[in-house]
Image 1 (cartoon, rainbow, N blue to C red):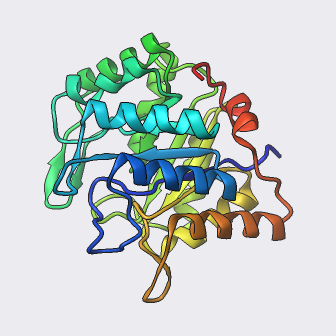
Image 2 (spheres, helix red, strand yellow; image 1 turned 135 degrees about the horizontal axis):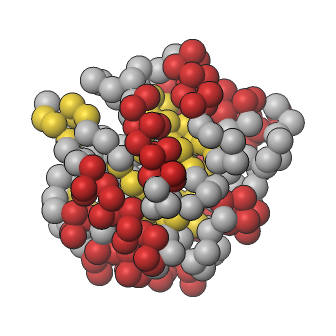
Length: 269
């Protein structure tokens, strides 16, 4: 069994400090928490840029500052988002910074009262740009059909193996969390590729435990879950530390960033 790759998603595009004071919203805060989470055992950091009102955005300079700041201080794999409700050219502009990875949404969903559209031509465009700049995509799967869409991108040469499928379980109007759903999605992944799982809210603890046991990888962090336990707010390092502790108890080794790069086949550094 490969070593466990732990991703931390410290902020997302929606949670603010009103929801949890530990949510980082400036480049400096993301860098500091990224370093702390790397020291705690995370190998990948997925983040969203924020504007002055703490709203998610695609500020190029914000992303550049985070990327450069983290590379100076630690070797964590940096993964900015390419997901949002703006034009595809804006969503992918940070690819020319050559981050290690970027998220890649491969299908449309009904999300928070509106349709989050990811048309096939737009998905191809984003995948082509990532391929051009040597950026490793993370295939975001909110439904079984998104796994099929990811497989199609691999078959057409737009995503190189080993591809990383990221299963997102528990968002309203998308696939709900259940062990059976997760196992069915795992079974769809072609041999030679990798998978990661996200559990939203209270499901985060369950999904990371299943990932450890089943040989996959997991994501933790305040983007997906603001709480450590019932009504107890979490911090990002705490959530990483718990995942490491669970892995130790379940006798699964945790990958360092260098080991994760090798497992994922990451080219940029």
